[in-house]
Amino acid sequence: MNIHEYQAKAVLREFGIPTPRGIAAFSVEDAVKAARELASPVTVVKAQIHAGGRGKAGGVKVVKSIEAVESEAKRLLGSTLVTHQTGPRGKEVHRLYIEEGSAIDKEFYLSALVDRGTGRVSFVVSTEGGMDIEQVAKDTPEKIVSFSIDPATGVMPHHGRRIAQALQLKGDLAKQAEALVAKLYQAFLAKDMSMLEVNPLVVTKDGKLICLDAKISFEGNSLYRHPDVVALRDLTEEDEKEIEASKHDLSYVALDGNIGCMVNGAGLAMATMDIIKLYGEEPANFLDVGGGASKERVTEAFKIITADPNVKGILINIFGGIMRCDVLAEGVIAAVKEVGLKVPLVVRLEGTNVERGKQIIAESGLDVVSADDLDDAAQKIVKAVRGNA
Image (cartoon, rainbow, N blue to C red):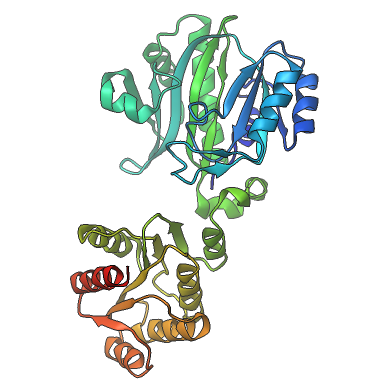
């Protein structure tokens, strides 16, 4: 689960992590009131969307008057920002963050994330703050320093010294860096974060180390422990189909393709998406119904797929281990009868009760194409979609 910048900074402040003063605004009037309350000679008006690259897209503006804050608020609220992370459709701006300006001396990059390879929290730091870290990694990888934290010891003094050395900080700034990494690690663990990015982390002209921007993602499987975090969820930032899927414990991610996919198992779902791309088309979604999906869950999954107007064909790929193929077949038939079938549907079944599943589909009278294996299924759905174009 993602949250907005202003929410992320509020979470960081709970742990004593320094950030600039700021106030969220949901209207032009809110923005003007916030600017007056901050009474800063320089004010930053920031669009709040769940995507990076806001500055390059015109979503972050530095102004020097209340009138300018009002003007920028009018321009941004209700507008659509298109960044390299939003995709071509962009995201509509519903919230702003009005923040006091900071006298910046230096900008750095700092993040913490779960390293799946080591099973530890790793920190990534770079002197190239304010830039896309992916581009830095590509062009100047030597400017990136990373290290992991041993969970048995937690943050040790040498971790702070390593960050200070990587960022070329000395004296009091080095001490601030040591304190900062300890607090960030504490926040990361306490809130079950999966990613915490501070870009940029800045040194101000008066020698303070502060988090000028913050992006936080939380581990979805741990949200039941954090009702305070769940309360921060902004449904307007999420795809309606993804919201509906979450209600039925379905793992669904909307994509930009035209072939809807229903699969059981994340690995098989990825393989299904890959083979669709191999044959020249694009998947419209990632959808894992899970190993023990019920007839009702399968029905809901099918309804979510067909709700996407971009879907021109559907591929169902089930390898029944825990999940029985006959249950899947019954769910698909129930869904088709409820919502109708307006696009080609290819079904590949294998595993437990596969023959019974195929029989149920064959006797249903529905226009469903059976496939022998994944390769056969991918070729058939791609051919059907192109023939329907």
